[in-house]
Length: 311
Image (cartoon, rainbow, N blue to C red; front, side):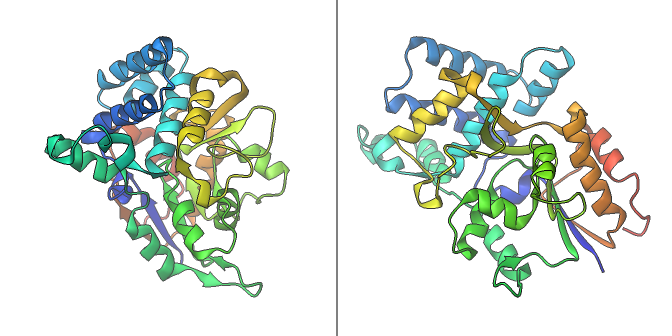
């Protein structure tokens, strides 16, 4: 019996913000960059203007779709979202960043609560989920069973980060490979380089992944560098500068793996087809943290078009 999990933003809510508090946490990300004295007037103005535009829409996704419909450049928005979600999931010394010049009692209660939430790197439920489902192959590696698949609307790295706790390797790229994650932007290159074949993916990310890769290079640099290990996946002066480079300073050298499924180009259609393949063979569908919003109706209708009526 084939079991498929369909995930929405609520599945990561213990580590990452939902719509109602995302704007304030994105502001804290910019504030944290500023704490490292990396933002000159021009960079701060670019990020502040972008934040104002995001705040002027219901969600960042709404703003992204508006840019798409108006055929306007969305590269800064996508890069900012990839950098922001990277920041949220990195290890951070928030005490030195935000408390050093403020006695804890002088901080607003709501600010303390926000900082505590930003400090949570992984939603504990992913660890429990993987511990329940992973099986050991003959070569010793831990994989998802053949009858288990996951389709996610989230572009976070929660699966990868949680899975590293079960691996000897500490490479985020290795985690993606072992989990057989299908990403929109890199799908074609992955197929060409033997990462997976069309029917072997286990986790499909409909909106891609909050990570970066260097243009003209098949190797996904994820967030910072091809040699990045989990122990170094932390927000400090060096990584803050790297994220800023990929967003603004050296933006022509990098691209992001975020690619919204409603773009309906060759990459996103390939990932949609992956999801359709999974759902066409699904006997039981478990929905976690997803409300089937009207915003996603076209893609949901498409990926379920070949699904059996029994699910």
